[in-house]
Every structure is written in C-alpha cells, then in structure tokens.
Amino acid sequence: MPAFASSRRFWLISAVVVAIIAAAAIAGTAYVQNELDPGDPVLGVTAVEVRDNEFGPAAVQIEPGQTVTWTWTGQEDHNVVGDGIESPTQSTGTFAHTFTDPGVYDYECTLHFFMRGEVIVQ
Image (cartoon, rainbow, N blue to C red):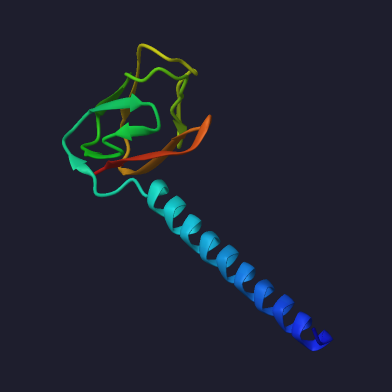
C-alpha cells in the first residue's frame, strides 16, 4: 500500500474522531444549559420540594413578605444556597426563608451543580 494512502486514511479517521468529539461537546453543553435554566416561574407558590436531582418547582414568583419553604423529599443530601439564602445540608425536614425585598434570588444545591432554582419577588 502506498504511503500516501495510509496517510490519507489517518487524516480521514482523525477528522471523523474530531467531528464526533465536537458533536458530543455541543450536545453536552446544550444539556447542561437546559438543566441550569429553572424555567418559567410558578406564580404564588411558596412550597418547593427538594427532590433528588431537582427543585420542584424550580422557579417561583411571590410577593414581598412571603416565606418560601423547601421540603426535602429525596433520598440524598442537599442544601439550598444562594442570594442571602443558606440552609444546612440535610436529607429530610424543611427550611424556610422570608423574602422582604423585591428582586430575583438565585439558589442552588452546592452538592449538585445542576440543581438550580430562583425566587422572583415582586
């Protein structure tokens, strides 16, 4: 087999591998972006479940002075940490926070980067 044929095959295989890696990276980025987006807020809801792998609902909209209560319903340890919010790490029980000032309060479980939520106070 001529040397140039072997070289051509090497470059073709390399190009296919690079294309597969690039496609996987793009797909992975799109997945993470979707997971980090809490979505449309649910109006007037003050109860949020801390499930394994998600907050439900992930986004709520309340009025100033209302309290949001997070209830652990999953099996794993989680916490709620964000803009002026910090619960202990726990696997059962509840945590509550009263929001007095209008604004958007982002929070997350620091043990699971993909678990994100937000409280919109207006």
